[in-house]
Length: 363
Image: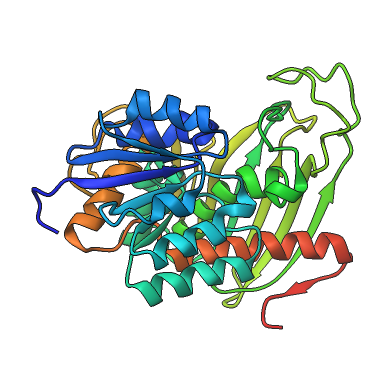
């Protein structure tokens, strides 16, 4: 693909995440045009085409019809979690590059089908973990790559809301989503943590899930009271993960927890040389001349970016780096094999919670 070529894009799923993240972000990337839109509710696709599409943009209710268009270079899969795998596989097999919204799939078996399709087709695949594109994440990753922290052997992946249960769409539907806060926001925190550690080989995990607050009324929820009859997923999930090299990760996720200091999609890492957290901006703790030191990094000033064209908006940066990867035939920031490990661990925590026992990844 020449640098001057327009990349033609199709959007599959024109609901909340497409409107809230994907389409407005793609609109800001030079040399990329949204030329096709698909949704099972055709009115949503029509509205998206009118707002974000080219004048001749096409609208579909069947994603397979969209994939028949050989002029489309890449697609965004922005559907409920259950549909991620089969739509992505079909899109790759039809010759399209794919960016699929997180999580990669509802289980590791489905995620592996996506990886196999990418290898089979020779097309690129990435997953929408835009948290990596935040300034704090980029800074911490650069320090990790420089060896600032040494061997990172303990980490915390934190995604806790006090009362912010999403009450729209299918978020509360276990069949469509495959889970609740663990697979929704815990997935972001875990992705960040594994990325900082550069460790993608889990050995075993122990997990617990809770349905303690699902039936509450007068909830104080940020988006209004949830319907207890529809709230079929967990309200909280916690996991302890041991990696093959002995490193451990403590994962905490919740949409609703009586917790006074909520934090979402952040990580804390501890290494042999230093540690870092995102509890108050970015803080690095270390020993300097035999004394404990805590350095708070000023994230409001400009810094070095991983790639050209970076902005202050993580969602836009996600699309810039993705389309740079397609245009330049380089790897995207989020490799499918990395996202597969995230799905592996999430699945392991759910299975451990269900069985009440340790889940081993080598079985």
